Image 1 (cartoon, rainbow, N blue to C red):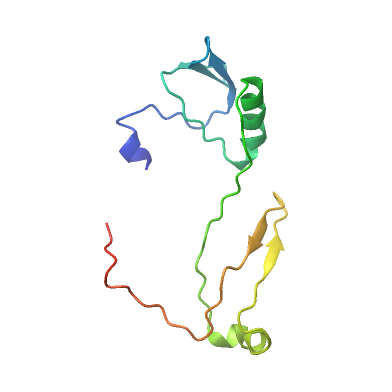
Image 2 (cartoon, rainbow, N blue to C red; image 1 turned 180 degrees about the vertical axis):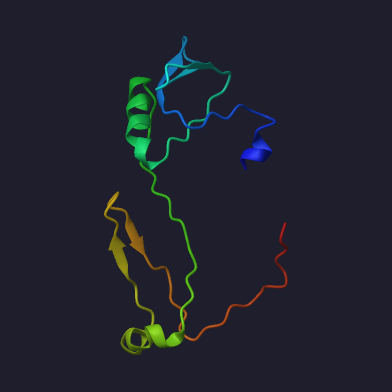
Length: 127
């Protein structure tokens, strides 16, 4: 993604943003923890989980409305049927959840397909 975008925009990595600078509304600069100031016509900020609180404070300081919008990411995990056999004998389609230590995120299963097979839909084209 970085290689594709780098010809169209400047990407700054390895420095934490400290302030979004505006002038009568539009964003004009971004200050970093390295004491740098980067001028911009448009700004995309991707602070990650560890700096999400900073971004919410900046949005409030700038008078922007912000909403909590959790994101679900899916990962497919395949196991031998014997691993889950005892569980699925009692609960065919079990739902499980766990809360992470680092951010107290809710981690959950979406579905279990006991003894199922993955099929390829011929009508769907890959890009």
